[in-house]
Length: 263
Image (tube, rainbow, N blue to C red; front, side, top):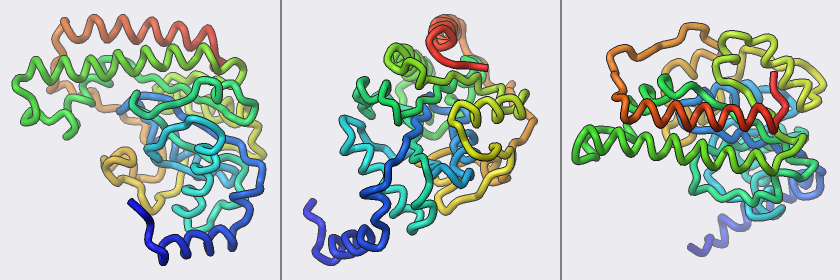
C-alpha cells in the first residue's frame, strides 16, 4: 500500500524532530523465546529501564542493518519520541515465521536473551489461549498436535540461533524471574552493562495487555512480578504430547546452557 502524502509528511517531520533515531549509535536486544514463556514480563522489566526502549512484539523480520534501523524508528514513533536517547532498542520474537539473519546474531551491538519455560507449564498455558481455541480445530488431538508442533519447532530454531550468538547470547530459565528475581535481574543488568539495576516493578505502557503484542492477561497489568504460579491443574496433557515436548525442552536447554552466558 502506498502511504498517503499526509502520512509520509508526518513521519518525515517526526524524523526531523528526532534525528537521534537516524544518527545515534544504538545497541539492540532480542528476546528470543516462545509463547507463554513470561517474555512479556521480562520485556516490560527491561523496557522500563531508562536505557532500553521497547516492550512488545514488533512483528518484523531482520534481514540486515536496515531492519534494525527500522526497529529504532518504529520504537521512537511508538513511544511518541520518549526514550529516543536510550542505548538499546528491544524486540521480542516468538514465532518462526519472523526471519532473523543469523549473521546479525553475532554482531557486537546485538544482544540476544533466550528464555525458556518448562514444557508442562507452557503446554497447559498454550492450551488455554484463544489462538488455540478448540473451535478452530477438528478435534482435541489435532489441537494438541498443533501446540506440540509450535513448541518443538520453536525450540529447534532457538537451538540453531544459539550456534551464532557467541558471547552475545544469554540464557535464562523463565522460572528464575519468579523464584530468583534479584539474581536474575542483577545478572541480566551485568550482561547488558546497564548503568543502574533492573527493578522488579515495571511501567504499564500504552500497549500493555493488548492481544497480539504481548500477554493479554490481568497479571501483566499489576506492574510488578507476582510470585504466585498457576499450574492450570484442570488441564491434562497426554503423554504422546508431553513426552516429545519434554525431550525438545531438555535438548534445547542443554544446548543453550552450553553456548550462552547463564546464571
